[in-house]
Image (cartoon, rainbow, N blue to C red; front, side, top):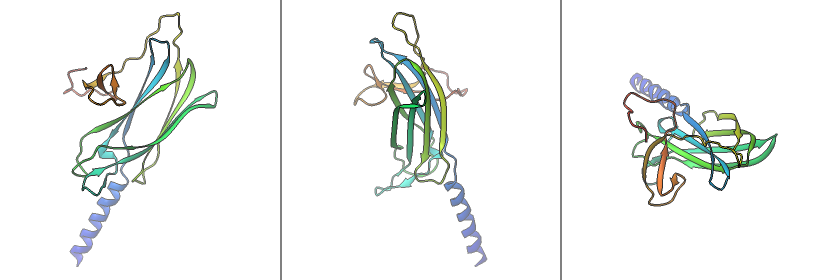
Length: 188
């Protein structure tokens, strides 16, 4: 009987720890100007799937779901917002899925000073909402030389089905981190 009680508390403790895991996310933003002199910002969110609470579906596959809210303000006035649910890729198991999955948005905004706010919540977890705020300056004047930001690429493949990562016939997976491990010796 004692053995069963000890096992129960061990399993309960493991369950509580896994439920309270902290969501790990990385954000990178880049400002761009098109040949038509239209400016836009790209947001790249990368999530460590091991920090997302995965649930099992009817096909015995595991996935996570995140609630994401993006808002851009200019002088306190809302000029853009989006609220959506993002599903992770599917996995065979709920643990040891060493993968980062990415969400990318392109948002057209004219030149100016803006406040960007992004909130992320793991839908299937009691973890806190992650919130990030930053100031954005878009300065692409028509008759002046200006440079768009640089986005490092983790990998690229020829586009088969056009998606958020598609540009000029290729799917470009951004490298969303400021850490470069010693094993990483190639930048695409």
